Length: 88
Image 1 (tube, helix red, strand yellow):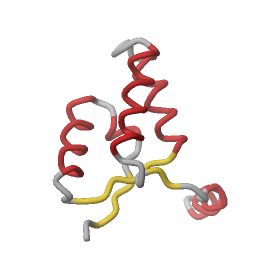
Image 2: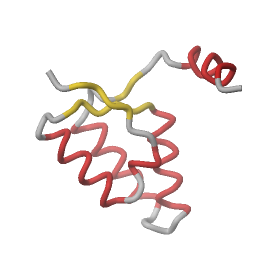
Image 3: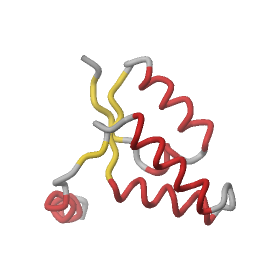
Image 4: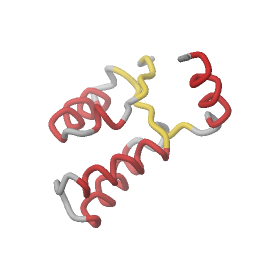
C-alpha cells in the first residue's frame, strides 16, 4: 500500500513538478491527496501566472479529479483553525 502525501499548490505548480509527482503516483510510489481548496488555488494560479487560459486550467483540474478520484480529501475544515492556533 502506497503512503499518502498531501500535495499543496506549491508542488502542483510549476507544471514539471506536478507532472513528475503525478507520474510517481501512477506508478503507485505514493497516494496523492489534495482538497477542493488546493485545486481551486491551482486553477487560479495557472490563470494568474498566464500559464494557460481559464478553460485550460479547468481542464487540468478536471483531469486530476478524473484520474485520481480518491485523492480529494474532505472533512478537514475543523482542523484548519486548530493548526493556525498551534502555529502561533
